[in-house]
Amino acid sequence: MKEGRNFELNLKALTWYEGVKKCRKLNLAGYTDWRLPAIGECITIIDPKKESPALVEPSSF
Image (tube, rainbow, N blue to C red; front, side, top):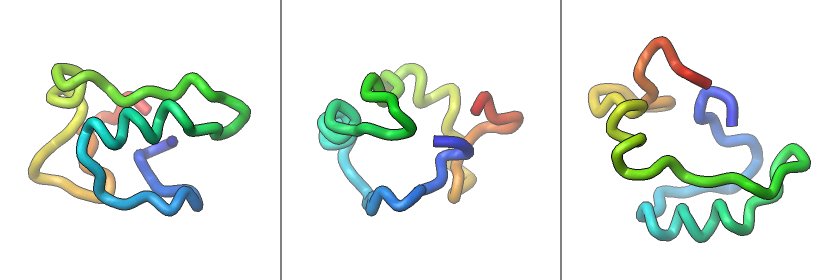
């Protein structure tokens, strides 16, 4: 999802494991192979000082 924004997906805060399950069921833009980043990947793309989106700049998305 571009820029980590919610596009009519009715998302709410989830645990990482709940997010993994949700990604397995996700069918978005004709794709069904969505996944969450691994914990190590999250550390490199999330800026804990930011929100909406909390992505490190420049964003790789």
